[in-house]
Length: 354
Figure (tube, helix red, strand yellow):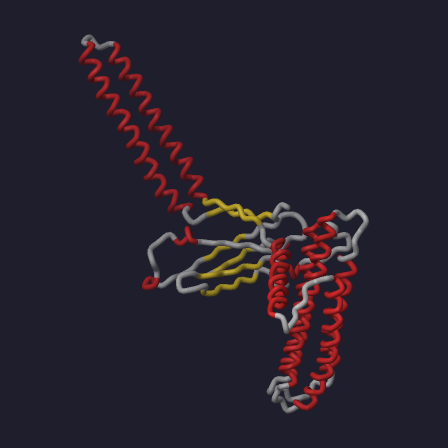
């Protein structure tokens, strides 16, 4: 059972798709659950999450499951927008990620219409299929041109790091556009090979759109050559490997801004130090009082030899009992603290400082 309590100001965001919970089996011994909550537009916003997992007794292994708990938090790039005055490195990265998310939606829309048109269950022909596919493709190309016009234009007061980041954004946009065009090409190939009852008409639409996609692809490859970006040559394994490696590094470079720095501590660990200090204080006080009493007794003793021996024996007993008192009290209280706060932890996430 998973419950998420949202404050009143987050109810509208929840209705729009926030606070979504996904539970899955990670492997044979671990469970994975993901939670998505909306971020406030301004000011703090408090969330309460309560998770209850019921595991059959025959598959339960006795151990401390909370010690193996791992948590990761990242922002959702789809919710980010590129502002016109984005001059910092992080703003440029977030804007590029927001643009990449829009390109992904355009690619998904293009593929979805191709898949629906070529479905065997489609009874009526899609008369406006070509127009719809052209809308998705032109939207992706227009988005690319607008983002480049906003991001790649170098301002007079830009620092060298910002100018370098603008070039990386331009290259990353090109990589994501090539991925979109490649996905569109695969969708059109599946459309032309469809066994639908409207296969003849779909084949004509697919061939016409393939020419449009090929033209856009040629224009983008020409742009990459003009900018000096690595290009994938199908006849060169080294060039293809270099392009794939470069694309992977670009994705990691920009998605780095989404991951938050994590600071976490278990409540029981901090309570343990307070408990240990409290019982050490009690044991030390007890030993100190007995030491004063023993010193007074040794001073008033008539026989020097017998008084020293008695004082030494009693002092050893006091110090030994002090250590035992401290250990017994600390262990007794630690078990009870672990029962109450053993599974509780406080975690803070912050945007990485760069």
